Image 1 (tube, rainbow, N blue to C red):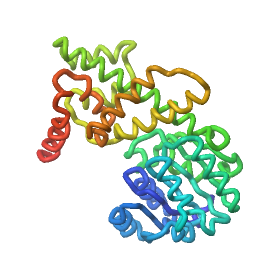
Image 2: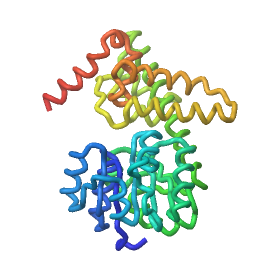
Image 3: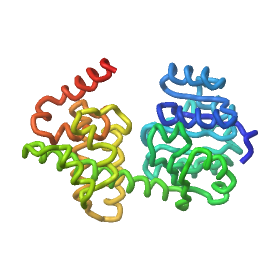
Length: 312
């Protein structure tokens, strides 16, 4: 793909903004940004020398390729199918690359609507963190027309250290749901293991080291264990998003009449966090439900986090 093509971003939270910064560093033309948080969009636009659009139709008119990084299916429907303003207005010839973790159904719905307007859409499901977005080291799972993927592979390579074409639209969303389902189950299991160790009076540093050398090892042991022990739940991937993503896996399982009791239990735990006002914590915050003495005082997790931030 030529760098002469212009690019826009809809949804410029931490992931979307850092993807835009990455491409700007590589001399791509970032012509427009949009976010319901107008201040965030304006700040990023000033940083990148682009326009903070006031309407979605303006975004589409301003770019050849539009990345979307929105929160959930409802937000996706709003930006593509809003009655008064949406991205599909005058969309012929445009490409939409949708990077949020969403249901396969909404990905298919958007792709079908785009084709009807002579536009195209790809899934670019991400399995990485904020720092990876900034450094161009995302793990991207791509779904959609394979020729469209190949035509834009160089752009996607510039965002990704690992790039995998999964199959037709909807398939990348299915795979991403599986990734996050297993990650969330592992995180919940680790929280229970460390919580029980704490209740038994065991040394948690010793337990973490033993876990790392045995069948209890996992990627989340590396990323989340210390935060669970220290109650350091600054958000990289929120509990609220974990509940949503495990819920997507639940719905997929129901469609094929498969029971997933571990996923159901994990989803219930993350949903409980959201209900109790802890949804903005990182997924490691699930330890607040398992460590002895914590669940009775969920607000202490937020207070501890604020105190650490003040000291830094």
